[in-house]
Length: 66
Image: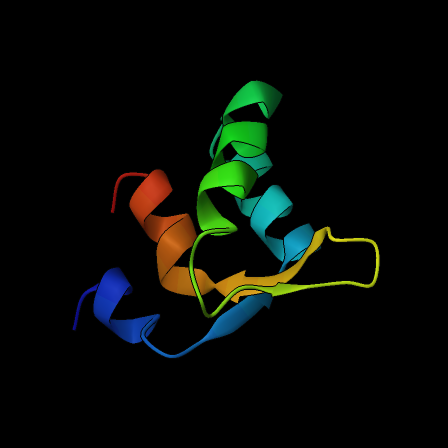
């Protein structure tokens, strides 16, 4: 099973996604672009202020190149 397959149906918090980007040496500007992109995914949930709250783990992996 690949990382991508193992992430299917798993949701992560915005904070967890940020840690993964940071751990993989991705620039903050890429994370901002990622959040804009993932907001279009119907599985992404937003908080009361319209910020990303939880998102699909597989979206994180795709942006990290898995």
